Length: 146
Image 1: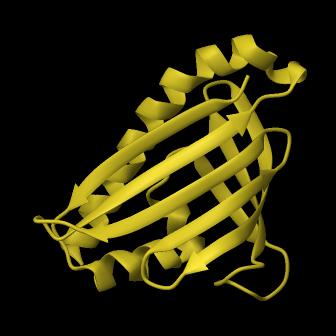
Image 2 (image 1 turned 45 degrees about the horizontal axis):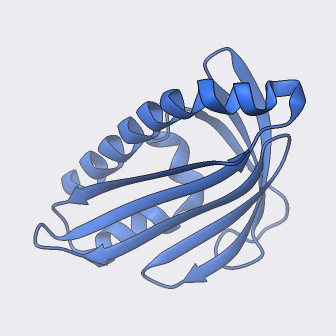
């Protein structure tokens, strides 16, 4: 079973300001409660090919999420491939909206048997959605305050 989560957040700020914050991958730990630390593999920090390890905690579980940026559409989209113990894809998409811009975060993840497989996914999905919605609210506050 694969878990799919899609969340959105309106942001009262122009697209270019939203993109500046989103494209600063190193700063994601400032608004992602579950992202404890990001360590880059190499000097690349933007664009397709960025490789990073993100120490992540959801509830009692801590993982070292290995990610690679596979989509980078300047100003609008960043997509990653998760290659750690939890595998799958993630995508951030920015678009114009009446408020300023809209950020959509979608993840498609597969949990291994060691994290409970299908049962682990079913338990984790509502928890991840709640944490990630909080992350989006924090992101919006940071961008709106800039």
